Length: 279
Image 1 (cartoon, helix red, strand yellow):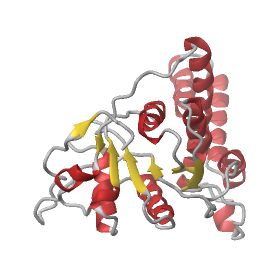
Image 2: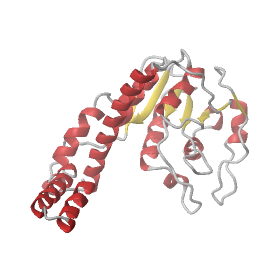
Image 3: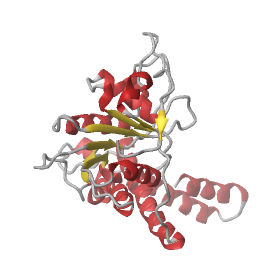
């Protein structure tokens, strides 16, 4: 919409088509208003988010709870909870909630470093430790850069065991597609719901807001992602390549997840890594 607005401005400034330029700018401004307008943004996103219901206990033993990463920063002036993105923190909280329903379940944390010195998986592990998760119950997948890689890496050691998959509600359809394509059938545990329908205050519902613009952005992002998934699989006729995850085994977690001194250091001591072997 902004590009469209700048195009209209260029028509006004550099051509004689001022009336067309004004119309283009008007369309741009109206479009920005609408996509930041709750009745439209929530109507777009809600069907995508509400395809899967929140996770409720099942009468089966759960072996793994996998939390998909979603962004972080490394800043020694911040507490670990503030170094995680809002989305990552909500996902992690839901993963820990589900894990505590099943004593003995392992918490799988995934995500690569994204250009920083610490992986998303390790950053979430620091917060999980602070929230009371024991070190031997944490497994890290540190090299996966997207959901496709996360699913393939998880397959190599989850195999036929029971797993709960935690990610944002808007991302759950795409994530389930990838994991099912990789041969897994996880229980979905959607979280981080953004679109709400029970907004009664007129000043909340009918005033354009950045939070509603975010909902439209999520809808657009996930719709493009779903389209890309289908096109990719159709074009590539993909198989299931071997995965090379960085999995921390129980006897290595103490070294890998040791937190440095109180100056908020990274999780020190490089982990002992092996190929995922079902342990």
